[in-house]
Length: 387
Image (cartoon, rainbow, N blue to C red; front, top):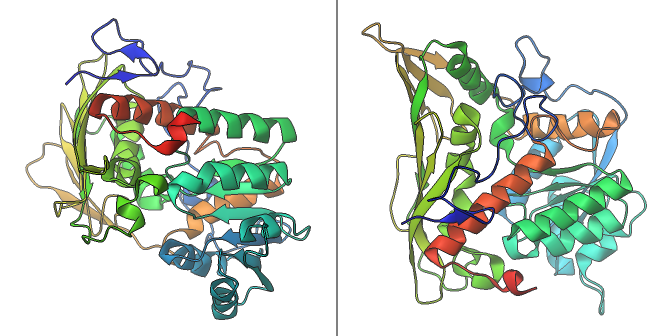
């Protein structure tokens, strides 16, 4: 089924999600069409926990599972201070603070939300937002308006309009803003980009990437909640998409199919990206099928496949450059793997940067436009779209 992205029908001449100019000033598209390697993932780089400047005081908004995982890695950084955590429930925030050693915690108080109380804390330098997707825009806007640097979980927002507004606020206030696509900062993934763009695999012609699991049949779960931005597309697709973008860049056209449940939330979706070179990327995400969670990049001379873990955190790369036997490259990581992303956020703020060259805001906005087009195609809408 043909779809639309960025307002352009894929059946028309390829103008969808125009690639950035060759000077590399808009998005990650530099002359070599590569995602820029962050310093923490360069060969011979020190451990990402090693300080790169003045300490930053962190505020963590929400206390769910991903908040706990990332907080454990924040605590590993030598120049990170766990200052404040917030939740709707004061008890939940206090328990999280005690568990990880935060200096203070905030819950809802009267008409004031816990996150707003955290944002109003003058000691907080940077906030990490890990609320359900549907609240990202509201919370990030409050944080930026309050003068805080922001790292926001993926998907960055529900739609491109929200992302564009947040980008404008951050730019106007000279604040750092980044979507937490941690996969871009991993040494294993950056090694994959190096191989892909070295010519060892030849011209890249096809990318396949999938991520899916059988989600619990729990209507109260955020995974299935339309108000929370539930569904496989928004929750999972950023990871398969990362492999397409890192290998081929943004596409010239997009098509998609998807299956929705009775609440209008997608059970699974399949997205095809097409490029003027004739290359394709086929991406799938599912809440009703257990998938291998692999990325495969194929060129005219050979292929590369992820292994040793899901495609968003691979510990192994398998490479066959047409010599008859694949080689395996293995990788170790520090912490749970979020340390590399956190080091980049910290470094950028310390150096006065307002975005990461590896995960620029322009890439996030283009991604949200792409997802807007896919959602239009499969009929997936959220309350935020009516705002």
